[in-house]
Structure formats: structure tokens, C-alpha cells
Image 1: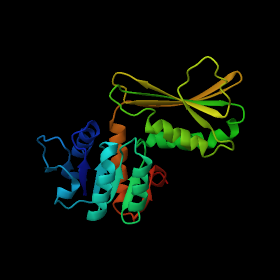
Image 2: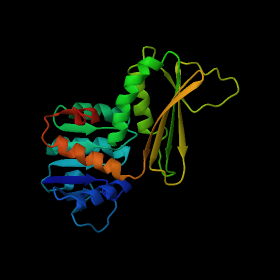
Image 3: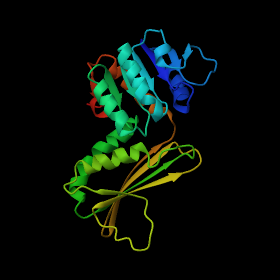
Image 4: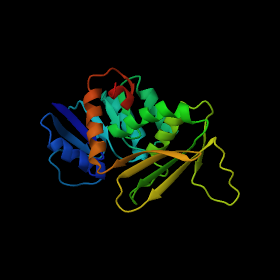
Length: 249
């Protein structure tokens, strides 16, 4: 049985995680962390520091502003943590790197297994195409999403750039009448509307041919499923920084 503390338990993803956990016989929530005070089947605390329950892992779907403090508290309690919150600052990422010397930390800008398999595919085809194909990314999300472009769009762009011989300069949307659109630019475009859980399309556009690789999230359940797999994986790991590439090996 995996004993979980949910950070951000009443947010959209926190509630999605509760559904997945309730349908599993080998997962249980022992405590929740949230500023909101609602009724739950487990104790609710304002911060992890207040929690007294014994747990195997903390799973975080919260707000980027709260992640640094959570990581500090996980270090104090010697608790592994899965950070699934997006839009993290470089300062917070650096804190996570430092904390990973003491505790296991799992971080991914996208917890979907499909997105991470897509990354592997992009890294295989990009070297053959980069010289002759323009590369653009279009991402779509619901109208409540605060950050743009999405962390996943940046994750895809970085994974492409990692295997490019000539690194791409990111252009966030395109406007103006004198654009030259050189091949060493990668456009990243954000759409916000309705209740779209998440859609990412990577376009390779060459002369007279176009290749598109697309991932569509039909529900938030895929992110909850990936985070729970990460939690199971992290339980028995040594201190260090882990990602989906480690889980998929």
C-alpha cells in the first residue's frame, strides 16, 4: 500500500488524483495540504509542516509559488516528493536540485506517459529534418490556465533543441509585417479557450511536405495516472532527481 500526502488536494488535479486513488486497492491518501478548508475523508492541513501522518510520498499539484516551501518541508521530513506543478521558476528548480541530494524528487513538466513517448519520437526524427524543415509548436489549453506557453510546450521545444546541431531561437507567437521567419527560429504558439485539457502539435514544415505529431489530452486523468506511477516509482529510490525518462526505462 502506497501512503500518499496530496499537496493541493482540492485543486482540479488534486480532485482528479483522489478519484484515481479511490479506484485503486493499493493507494491511499493519509493527509491533504490545501489553503481551502473543505470536508474530506482524510486530515487537511495548511502546510506539510503541520502534518503528523506517516507517508511514503508527497504528490504535488499546486501553484508554482508554493513549491519551494513544500520542497524545504519535504527535506525536513525526509519525504520523497513528486512535483507535477508547472510554470516553475529557475530559482525553484535550483532548489529542487539541491534538495535532491537529500531526498528523491520526481519532476516533469507533463505527467502524461504519451507526451513523454512523443518526446522520444521527436528526438529521433529531428536530426534528419532540422536542416530542411521549419519547426513550430502549437499548444491549446482551457481558459483557466495561467501560464503561456505551457510548460509542456517548452518541454517539447527543449527536447527538440537538445538534439539540434544548430540550436533554435524561440519565438513566442508571431506578429508584424516584416518577419523573415528564418529556419533557426522555432515558433511556440498558445491558444486558450473553453475546457480543453491540453493539446500539443509539433509541425515540421518543409518544401511541399508537412509532418505533424500531435498529442491530445482528453481528460486530466492521464496526468493523475502518470503522477501516481511516479509516486510508486519514487518510493524505493535513493536521493536524486528523477523524470519520466527514468520511469519509462
